[in-house]
Length: 141
Image 1 (cartoon, rainbow, N blue to C red):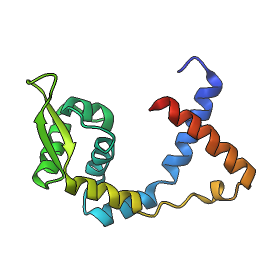
Image 2 (cartoon, one colour):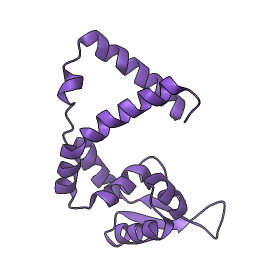
Image 3 (spheres, one colour):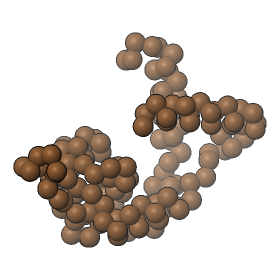
């Protein structure tokens, strides 16, 4: 709990809306890339910034051994590369290769239509929601 019950309730509603309506995109993303969705999740997170394997595990909500297996697989496929961390030579940073960025571009181009419950909102409600989300996203970055 965040300490703000209304925010928690809104968050659960937003999460439910997205999770309940993302299956079509997930199937399309798997079909378009030929990758298991577990690998797609990691590529999407690495698109924002390079990470250590431990950070990949946290970002993808998997344990460190599973993250290592996934990164090994993505590296074998030529989609990521491990390089020495510039601030800690004992750590490796995982980053996308050009081929990995190409896969992320395919994901970004994969059709992801709004569910009817959102598409049927009137223009003013959609604009208001868009402004709120933009404000929230600017605070996260």
